Length: 179
Length: 76
Image (cartoon, rainbow over the protein chains, first blue to last red):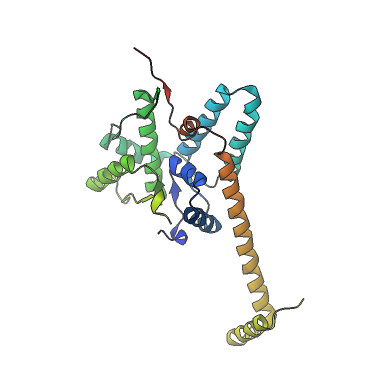
């Protein structure tokens, strides 16, 4: 159990949506307690990934569904808390992370007859690096739903502390361990 | 304005201990209570907005919203 008062935390893209969709009452209560004390901090990269997603869904949707998609997008933007920019400091730290762990630690996602291209997987991996860098620069623990990808980043930072002066360790918190 | 007698007794005792008048203690307590109420309301409002943001989408669409772009696999 993570004390909501020990926040604020930075939420990774998939953690934010997973927690928003959870039906587990203990996690919902944790979210209520957290939101009454702190806003949800995210990286600008999360907003980019999300808005690209809404855009792609909207573009491929039938006309009669587009209004619903747009109202979901507006709801997301209305709920947004502080958005951390991809500034010089984050860029420097993200570059170091990408040099230390250049390749994605997990393969591209697959689902039935669909698959993620290698190029998309690499972009998503680099976005994860930018989100981890944002958490380090913002000095906030990162709430994630993807240990397989973020743990190698945390270990790499721990093994090369001189590349991250006065920063780190990267503190990771799994969504499922919050409540 | 009327106050429950036990709350009033507690407020008087706090006022005596802090050497301030009763209205200071009551206005501070009211202000804290209103702040907590507003925070709870905002928390419910944000949670409802978040739930609306991700409802009505298929699994593949939710992947897209998480930044995962899946494309049809070419058949050989």
